[in-house]
Image 1 (cartoon, rainbow, N blue to C red):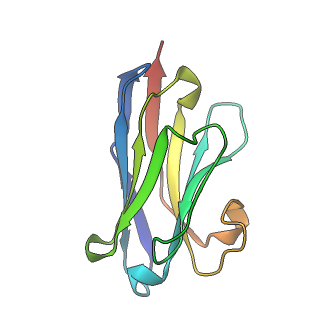
Image 2 (cartoon, rainbow, N blue to C red):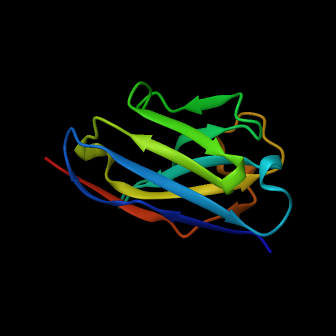
Length: 125
């Protein structure tokens, strides 16, 4: 059984930084999973944030976070990171990571099979 666990969320002032981690347990070899980050703010739909291919060679970002967020992976640690800089109040949401085997756009929730519980990020103005 595959399990994903996020950590690193918290409360930060606008302009600050956080680094989220997503650890994948169980299932097939970690390096074969594409990993995506999504977020959901209260009363809003789930939103794609960033994704990284299984080998780390391809990365994808939502326009709203380009230039501020960086996704990376360490296959030796079964971990994907989301470095978030220059945070804005509108980045406030629950951030979840997801793992998938086959992805075309990398930006659609249905392309991912397993999901973590999420970690809260709150950015104060």
